Length: 143
Image 1 (cartoon, rainbow, N blue to C red):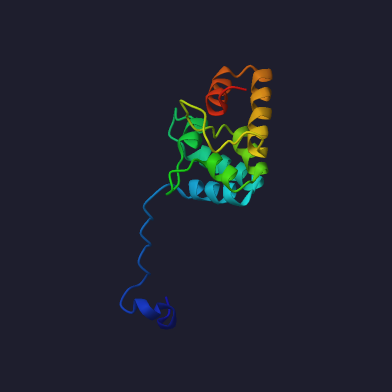
Image 2 (image 1 turned 120 degrees about the horizontal axis):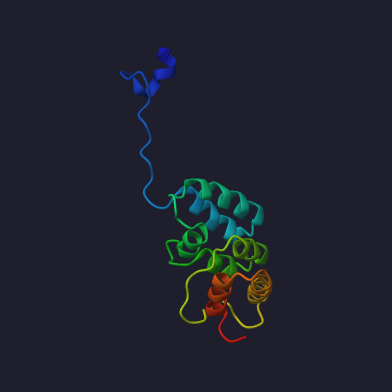
């Protein structure tokens, strides 16, 4: 390394390594930003990147459904509160359905987000995915 390149690392050959940030993996931060800004394309690519980092046997849909931001909002809740229906659809497609024992208030009756969740419910019924159907029914409540 030249003397000019050393600059602020005067007596060191290489710059110090950056400490890894605490908190969730970068893919989760990207997914929350994509949910907030309605970037369905980024949801799909971040989902694929996160899939590669999961531990063997860890379920991607479960991990995405359990993801929370600093405000304790799920990915789906963030997309709905930002009224980004394309992101809601993309998140539902990858299975980012938060666990709910009762219907959630943020899926307001008559909202576009609720309509997207209903459409996904019908799709999962047609595919015969009982697990996702059950999660969606808990999330939506009485239809």
